[in-house]
Length: 84
Image 1: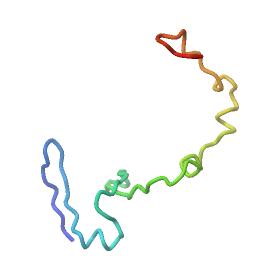
Image 2: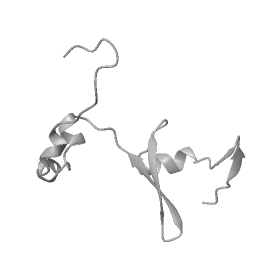
Image 3: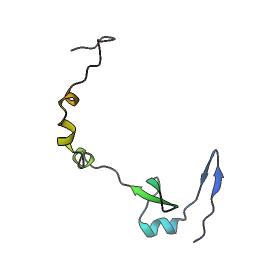
């Protein structure tokens, strides 16, 4: 399938045919992650995070908390009506 890159404001765009999107199961208003791989542009549909656990599933808490200095931060003196 041949697609054409066209000017769209200050950017460029490619219109994807409905049949192509249906073939891979992508719906309107989907979000994508784009990367350059071996000189090609690769688009991957970004799936919505369903839970907080899923969002932090690859978070390495051991390495994060290894340095105890990361447990507390000094933000300075209150600047407004903060309650402590």
